[in-house]
Image (cartoon, rainbow, N blue to C red; front, side):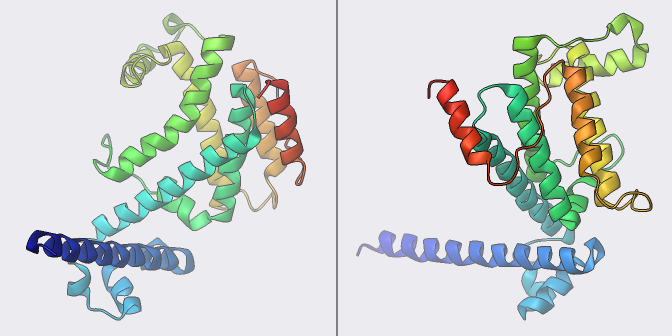
Length: 261
């Protein structure tokens, strides 16, 4: 074997070992997050569970913030995969049904993974700033899953929108800037409806997952479905009740047959 090939093979093996070690670090960090809370995710705590020293772990992640951001990247990727899988499993060809499938999958992931949800959505970013990391890009990918369906509904249905002239000038200006950031996929008025829908979902999920309404409710699924009905009214689309467990495959086949696929 030529010397260059031997060197490349050795480097590839070393890279694979490094990637495997970094994946194990993030796995242990997640275990600490779930079992003991976000404050337990420290470089030293992860190192102890791995049987290595803190300084040795810094060879893989240069700081605690870098480790946490890497964990957030994993969580965002998992969540995006969960949502897109739910969208595909729905078998829906219309964006309104896909949107409902995504929203329900989001709640299921959130209530099943409360610590992970808190890590992603209950951790404040610096005021007026966005984390300039791969995790922020994954966060945008997460938002894009919802945005794509709202854009598809807007292009085909043209849901009712308010007038910018009737809004507070500051609000109208912010909406115009946001519309520009999403390359005009939604006009400012339609972006207002999209953001209103997201804030309602997000607020309700936070109250449930962070146990802020536990004094009154032990099961918020009916309330969440009422919220989805409100969103459907805002978007002027039909609401469909959730599919009973075990019937999703049959409904998917029916939808594909109706679409001629």
